[in-house]
Each structure stands twice: as C-alpha cells, then as structure tokens.
Image (cartoon, rainbow, N blue to C red; front, top):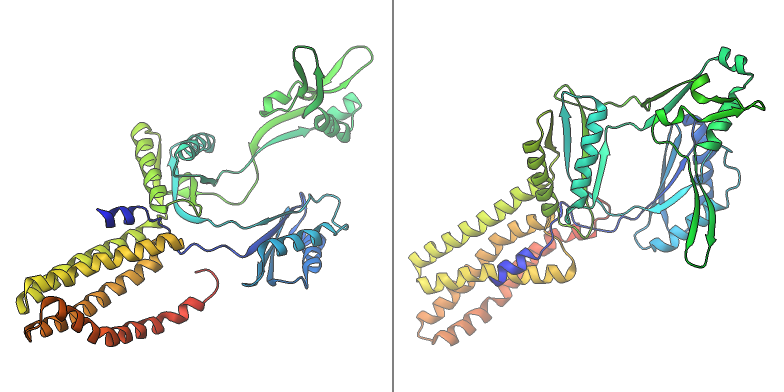
Length: 428
C-alpha cells in the first residue's frame, strides 16, 4: 500500500519538464506583406537586440500581417535579466511603421501536447464552431485541464461593400463611411457619478458583435432631420476570414481542439478527462462526432505496461529459479528488494520534481534487470556463507560486505555509460 500511495502521487508527463529558455517578440502589422514585415519590423528588432548578453541564437519568421522573433538564451543566463534587456532594447526602437502595433514580449511557458480532439460531421463550419466552443468550455471546466486551443476556425469578419453610385447619390466619401463606423462601433467609458447612496458608472456600449447590428448605424445626420444609415449605402455581410488553410477529417470539414498540459498538471489525468468528455459528447450528439487524435499518452502507457510486466515477470522468475536451486526464503528476500528499491526511487523523484515520462520509464526498465542481477548475486553469496555454518545474521553481514565492491563497480559502469546524456542541452 505504501509503494502504491507513493506511486500514485507521482506526476506524469511525456518528456522531462524543464524551463524553456526562449523569449518571443511578436508584432502585428495589419495589411503588410512578408517583405514589409521583415524590413519594417523584424530586422529592426534583430538589430536592437544584437550583442545583448545572455543570448545564444535569434531566429525570426515574417508572415503576412505578422512578425515573430524568437530569442534563445544561454544555459547560464538569467531569464528575468535577459527578458528585461530585450524589452528595453525593443522599447527604444522609434522607427516602426505607423501601421504596426506595439510589440508583445513574453517568456515562452512550458507546455506539452497531451492530445487533440477533432470535431467533424455533415454540417457547416458555423455549427462546428458552436460545438467546438461548447466542448472547449466543458473541457476547461474540468479541474484537470486548463489549456485548450481551437484550430481550423478562421476569425469572423464584417464585410461592408459600398457602391460608388450610392456614395455619389448621398454625397459621401469612403473615408466618411469608414470614420463613422470606427467612431460609433465602440464601447466607451464616460467615467462615474458619485451620489450619496450609490456610484453610477457611465458607459456607452455601442460595439456590434453581429453583422446585422451594424445596419442601423448612422453615417450622417442632415440639417432637415433625415439620417443616412449604413444599410442605405452598404451591403453588410458576416463571413470567415480569407485564409488558405482548411481542416478536413475523413473528407469532411473539421475543427480541432488541441489540449496541452502545464508543468503542474498530470498528462494522464488530462487525457483521461478529455476522453471521458469525448465519449459523453458522442453519446449525446449524432450530427457531429468527436474523435481523439495525436494521443501522446499512448507511448507513455505502453512503457508503463512494459515496466510493470517486466517487474512482475522478473519477480516470478526470481522466485521460481532461486526457489528451485537454493531455497524459497532466499528467493523471497531477493524479490522483495525490487519494490523497495522502486519505492526509494519514487520518494527521491517526488522531492526532486522528477515526473514519470518516457525517458525516466526507459531508465526504470533498464534498472529492473540490474536490480534482479545484483540481488541474485548478493543473495547467493549470503547463502554460500550460511551453508558454511554461520548464523543467518552473520552470513548476511559477511556476504553483503564481500559483494559491496563488485556490485558498486557494476552499477558505476552503467552510470558512466549513460552519464553523457546528463550534459546534453536543448529539447527533444
């Protein structure tokens, strides 16, 4: 029971959890081509941070409307100091294009993909978006999951198409229409009024979230009391953003929900909670179905199964072999060393913050064989001293003392063989 409690308190992850030594600088530049983003934004950021202490490598990506610069810091550098230096260097840039937005600088947080869920069915993208958002809310409502991102759904846009003949008829310009929409389609705070009994907040909530709500927006009010509404001069449509990426699953339009785990979360608990909601969703919906994709816990569960099977088979073989050639008491004490050794490992791993992942499981699988071999060698030597007529206690002391050197040397050679991996840097 004690080993089981220690084991259950361990956290699971796909790879070992380390702090990412990466900073990101992102700048939005609406309406700009990749070349304009590179020349006007990215190159200036790279020049500003060039030569800062603690930076190992700088890479950048320039896309339409957006630029991103990734800064990798050295292993011995302090993340907070480098983040402050990079932010100060970027803030000193005063030659960004007028249309670009303020740079966003942040430290990349640790995240690991647990699994993805795909929604698909004989329906349109609007319905899939609706179901995806509801399923996302259900996933985030569970205590095990905190990171869910919807992929495959473009942003909704309002399209205002104005004909030149209508502008001429009402004596308007396109700029007047754009300014009217920008000035009125906003939420604005007007301050507050303090009275003796209450505090009154003044707000102008005029932002529209659906295209039809823009129809009655006033573009111009004439002196004779007549008004020109947006619906009089423009065709208003609500449509998806024009992006080249489309998502399909089995030939049908699909939406993907990517579920990540943070450092504090358990990847197996995240996956189990997500799969339970997928089963519940499929039981209550027929038109739209959900399926699990890219489940990163599969290989983790397989290695757990290999470890458990190897441990059980090793215990059985040790008991049978030693019981047949020596005696059952010796085989019992040799086999009992395996769970005790793993209990000590789990206790140390818990204090050190080591998770059960594919790398640590590989080490456990290797160690199972080493434990059995060393236990057999020590146990057999103790039994040899016991057969010489010594008492059980004296045989255990003398037999163990004789094998301390050989066993330590054997374990040390294994440690030395794998020690170089400890000094490798970077992410797998």
